Length: 105
Image (cartoon, rainbow, N blue to C red; front, side):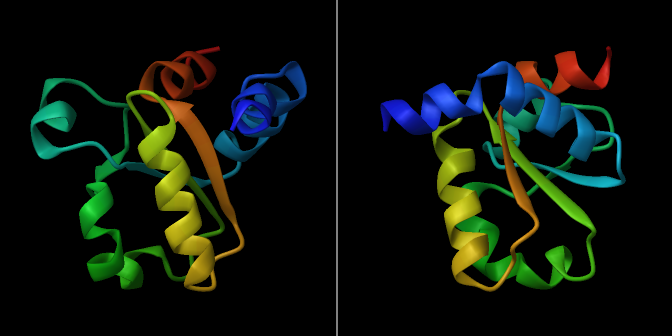
């Protein structure tokens, strides 16, 4: 677990995430609707973690998928669900704040 978090927030991880974000990323906020309604990233769609399996068709034909949440835990789970369903172009963006910061560089 520590390694996942460490890798997610290393400079190399940030650079890779910045590259994905700048290359037509499909931004998916996996927090609850209430959390999404309070704030999110510009251009993001809200698909709560527990709804990911019901919305797999929304991920098809996306060049890059970036999932994010409040702490990075739900987005890690969302990434795992998507990968188990055949999506290999998924990046865990970690937190909403992290994604916003990188988008606004």
